[in-house]
Length: 476
Image (cartoon, rainbow, N blue to C red; front, side, top):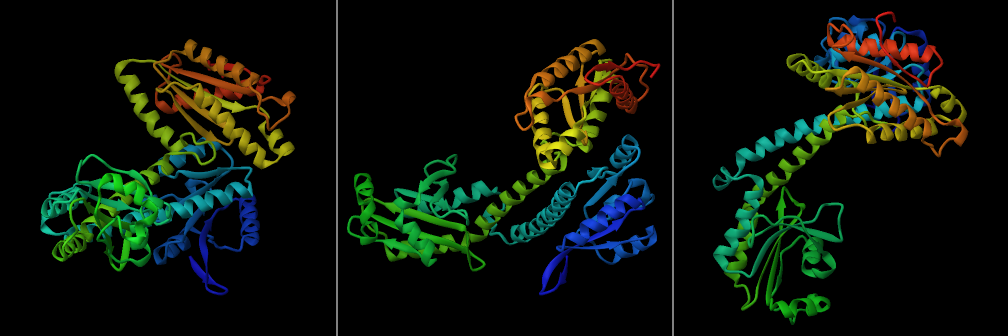
């Protein structure tokens, strides 16, 4: 991003597109949206020079063929492709270039803005993962010798069991309070059982943890039945026979990490000064260990979130085309090797533009999302269903011959025709046209033929009145 006005960061976008209508749409979009700074670039060389100097938040291009000879992995920022013209050919180029983010003409401002925001957040997410990975490596190097063979969960358990072993306590556990939480804490490790994790505690019942949280200092309760801090929870503590409690905030780099506490309690007598010092020393020296545990978990979570983002279509939650082609390649080679059948359905919602024109783009999106869910509900686990673009969907049916694929397509067509989407009037129900192709029935030489033939059958279905299923034949 770059600064503007009073130091607010504008998101910098590079635009390289040769299509006049697309450029008009983009210029108008960026005129209306103040938070972006768009730089329109005329030729490939200027683009390369600019990318070498600095990376924008996102690069917007037309057809991927416009950037022949540039390695997409070296661009170093998210890419959005604006497709017009021959869509099937353009989508193939996208897959070859490994671009997963695209829009199909006619473009809508809300769609484009959503794609931009997703691309920018994905860039941030990637930077976070790499930054935290570096942090994690640094922290790992500095961890105490005893932790070199431990994974994070073992590290936490090591701390609580070591204390329990040295000072003979009734209970000893590690408690975490996520930064956004103030009402609940979670026991993430306890010496009684290494498998116990994530037990939820109601903080109303733990005033000693609340006090340590607000003061960032250890809290020592000499006698739980006499201490005024525990007056409201005495009826809970008395039957358990707890006498003395110690809570130590575990602080790393001057902050309470994930607000993490060591809470130990004993029933027969109070803690001695020596024991308190010992607990505090162990808690302090294990801060590195625990920070590492949290960081490790955070990086893993962000990685899985990023992986999910990379294979999912933002609007429908179905797989995106990029993931579809990856799975398609695997399925096709398996089909060939074992001489199975493989069929493909290309599904297109009839006259979907009318719904957008009549009810507006937002309602169109809701209907599209519900339509995708309906398809998903009637898809086998082994099938691969993806949004192909706009209101077009593609379904891969492994081990399914042509006639069974036609029967499946017909069942879907009838099901959709009967379904009522309550955002639109009952009389304007959705219908679909479906093109079907099958291997090895249709003289298919490579995997691209399977999609191309399903596409041709779909074209035939649309040109002969719609709301029908057409099986590919060689005269198309």
